[in-house]
Length: 250
Image (cartoon, rainbow, N blue to C red; front, side, top):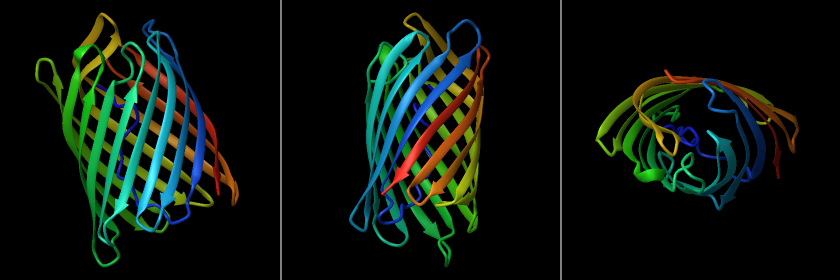
C-alpha cells in the first residue's frame, strides 16, 4: 500500500531550527476515481542538543473517502556518528488512511567528514478493512557538495492477507541551501502489495511509478513559500498533483 508520506533519511536538524509548514494540495485523478484535496500542517521543534520532535496533522479527501492523519516523531542524535528516528501515526476515515503506522530507523555517518550516511529502517502499517503491511528499507545518502545531496534506496514490504511481497526502488537529489532556496527531485518505481480504492475495491500486487519536484524558497530569515508538482501512475489510474504552502522559522 502506498505510504501516507514518503519516508526518507532524516538528516540531523540544526539546533534552534524551529519551523512550521502549512501546505494545501490538489490532485487530478483519472479513471473516474475522483480528485484529491488535502491540507497539512507540519511542525519541527528541537529539544536540547540531541533531540528533534516532528508533528504532522493531515486532512485528506481521496477516492470518495475523507479522513485525518496525525503523527509524532522523534529524531535522537546518540553521538557524532549515530542517530535514530521513530514515528507513530494514526488516521480516521473509511479506508484511505491507516489506523496505525509505525516507522523506525537507525542511521550512521561514514568517512572523515561524515558525508556518507547509511540508514536501515522498518515500517509497520495497520490499514483499514483488515489489511496490514510490514517490511524494511535501506537508504544511502551522500553529501556530495555543500549544495548537493543524493539519496538512493530500496523498500521491501509484505502485505496481508495473502503474504503479498513487493519491492520498490527510490531516489532523490537535493540542490541548494537551507536559508536561501533548494530544489528536491525524487522518484520511485516498483511493486505495491495492495491499494484500497474503496470499501469493496482492492487492487493486488501491481507496478507503479511516482515522481515529484519541489521548490522551497526563503523570502527572508523568517520563512518563505514552497511549491511541489507530483505525478503517479499505475495500471488503474493516473494522478497529477500540485502542493502550495508557506513556512516560517523562529
